[in-house]
Length: 185
Length: 237
Image (cartoon, rainbow over all chains, first blue to last red; front, top):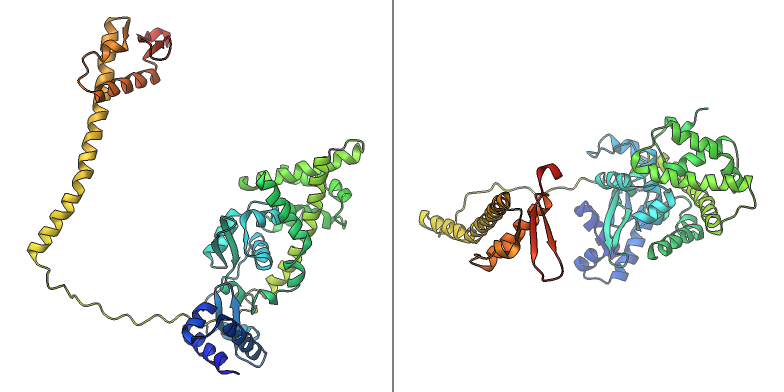
C-alpha cells in the first residue's frame, strides 16, 4: 500500500463516518486526483474476502465498514440495528434511485408510474436516501446514502447487479427525456 | 380470481399490470395489455386503492381502455393516444427490469450488511458555571430594560391595529343606524365630517364590509361619481 492510501485508511478509521475526497485532500495536503487514486488503491487492497475491513465509496464520501461476508458474525456485536422491513414499493423506489440517482421525484415517478412522495419521505427518515437541491434542475434530487450501500453490502453503486445496463439505459433516457419535454410545455 | 398482489404491499398501477400479465403467462405487448384490461378494471373497482395513488391507477386504466377499444375497432386511431400506449408498453418493460434487480437487492439487504464503527462522540466535559465578570444585578436590570425598549414598537403597532378595527366596527354601526331611519344616503355625506384621511379610509372599509355582509347595496354610475348606499330590507334577504 502506498503512503497516501495508508494515511487515508488511518483517517477513515478514526473518523468512523464518511469523509469526502475534498476533506481528505485538505487534511493530507494532496491533490484531489491523488486522493482519488489512493482511494482506488486502498479499495483494491481491502475489498477482498481475506480482509475484515472493507472500503465503501458513496455519495457522502469514503468510509470503512466490515466485510459483507461476515455480516452475520458482526451483526451480533454491532450496536447498529438495521430495520429489516422494506416494503415492496420502498424496495422498488430504493432500487431505482440506486441505479439512476441522483434523480428528481418526477423522474422516479415516471419509472414507477405512481406517486412516490410518501415512500421518499419514509426512505429519507430511515436514512437510506439523501435529498439535495440541484442547482440546475431547481428541484430536489435523491441519491443512495452510504448507509444504504452498507446495508446492501455494496462497495459502491457500481457493485450493483447489471449496473451498467440499467445505469446507462437508452429506454430510461428516452422515458426521462419525454418527461422533461412534457414538463417544459 | 385472486391476485398475488393482494398478499403484498401495493406496488402501484404498473406493479398490478405486471402481475396480471405474468399470471396469464403473456409477454408485454399492446395485445396482452388489452387482454388484461378487464382484470385491471375489476381490481381497482373491488379494492380500495389509496386515494393518493388513484389518479395514477386511473391514468393507466384510460390507456388500457384505449388499447382495448382499438383492438375492437382497429379503424379508430388517435395518434397522440397511440404514442401514449407505446409509452405504457415501454414503461412496463423498463419497470419489469427494475423489479428484477430489486429482487436481487432484497436478498442482499441486511444479509450482506457491512457494519461501521459507531460514531464516537467527544467526551462531554462537565459544564461549570462561569459567569462573566461584568454580570451584576444592575447589569441584568439594564439588559432587561433594553429588551423591553426593543419590544415597544411591537406593542405600539398592536395598539394602532386594534384601534383601527374598532373604528371600522363603529363606523359600520353608524352607517347602519343612519340607514335605519333613511332609505338611502350618499357616501359623501358619511365622510362629510371626516377629520382625517384615515377616517375616510375607515368609512370606506366599513362600507365594503357592510356590502360583504349584505346589509346594504351600493350604486355608482361611473368612475369617480357619487356612491349611493341603500339598506337591504330583512325581507329582501
